[in-house]
Every structure is written in C-alpha cells, then in structure tokens.
Image 1 (tube, one colour):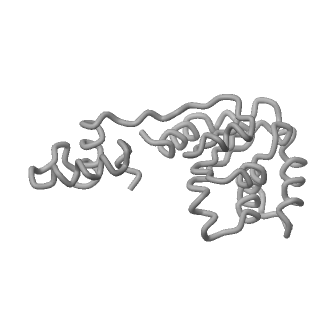
Image 2 (cartoon, rainbow, N blue to C red):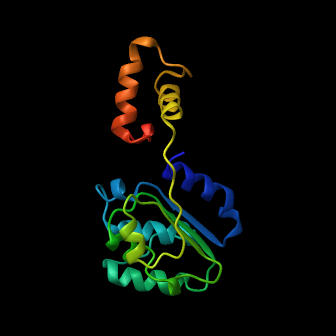
Image 3 (cartoon, one colour):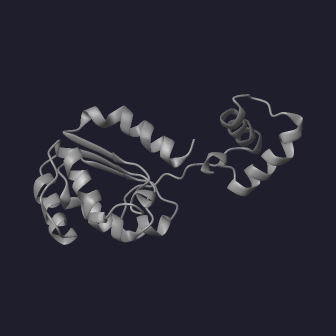
Amino acid sequence: IGKTTAARALFNRYYQNFEGACLLEDVKEYLQHHTLLYLQKTLLSKLLKVEFVDCTDTEEMCAILKRRLCSKKVLVVLDDVNHSNQLDKLVGAEDWFGSGSRIVITTRDMKLLKNHDVHETYEVKVLERDEAIELFNLHASKRKSPEKEFEELLNLVVDYTGGLPLAL
C-alpha cells in the first residue's frame, strides 16, 4: 500500500482515541487551490469541531493553534507534505499539542522530517514487480491478470512509477 492509504487506515483505526482528530489529505495539492492560512483554519476547525477562527495572518494563526491545542490530546495526519513551511505552520513544535498527541506526516522528502526533528519514521516499501502489475491491473480493468495486449504497457507503468503504480 502507499503512503496515503497507510495514513488513512491509521487515522480511521485510531482517531476515536483522541480528543480531536484531523486528516488533511494531499496537502501539496490542496495548497495549489487554497492558502496555508485556510489550511490552518481547517485544521483547528476539525480538531476542535468549531467554526473557522477570524484570523488574517499565518503567524497569528500559529499562536492560536498552540494556545487552543496545547492541552488537547489530538491526532493530526498530514498527507503529502512537500515543504518545511507547511510543517512549521501546521504542526509547529511538540509544545503545540497536549500529552499523548500524535502527529503523522507523509512525504516523499525525508529531509523535511529530519529538519523538523521527527522522532520516528517508517518507509513504505515498494511492491514486487508482479504485485505492482496485479494492483494496477485490478484498478485499471477490475481483473487480476492483464490481457496479453496490455502486458507491455503495464510493465512500462510499473517501471515509470518505481513499483508504486497507483501513484499515477
């Protein structure tokens, strides 16, 4: 399975164990259409089940997030983060959240995690070639085995995606 699928499964399995929980999928894509401030407001709204806070500045919103969440045990899952600024403005530092909180981040850039002092990492393993072909074929044609005329194309897809065919 891929990073997003793993993050979603983890969220669905554990969210009820927290005072607040928020899954923000595809942060990179989301920020193509919305501001970071809007994403901060979305995060707070989902975690506390409140309406959007009236705020016009990301730095001010960081202070609000810290103040409102520092005593709450929360689960935050950020999927497909691609810039350190996103982590700084969305999850700041450990003291932003109460005891027992968990922050899960998926990214393709391990340096982001190192620069943000992430304690534990887990690297999603790529599929074996046969598994990758089968998975893509299941999603593309709803069949387990590829038709003969599509085998070459499926091999190209698996090669192009580096063993993660659903990345397309």
